[in-house]
Image (cartoon, rainbow, N blue to C red; front, side):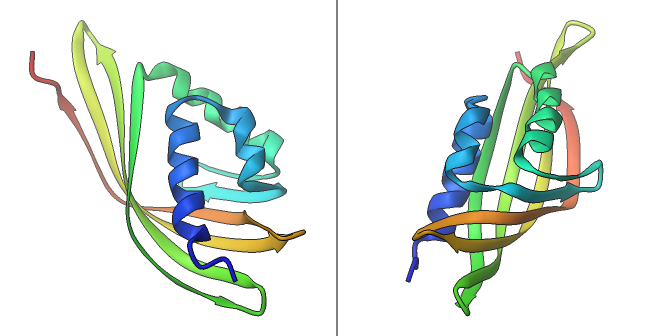
Length: 134
């Protein structure tokens, strides 16, 4: 069916987030996407885009997509995507990096022949906040 879709969607998600190209999320997510994390729980792409405005506080982000596990059943996909998300910012004149280890719990469905995320839960495993070297 859509064997490579989970990798493609996760990689595009990381790119769109890091590029702050939130309008393109409609290419990879359903309009009624369910997005949740320890800090938020929202339903709908419009609500999720509003949550993403908090990224404005970072001068850059880099989401590195890693391992993926899951399977297609009955026209849908349930799986997991590993990610290390880096957030660069400045505090008191010092550059800093907030790094988060994430295991996304993903649901992908087929919408008119296009695989789209219908749910993503950000399971945060750890985080660290360190100064950057000069």
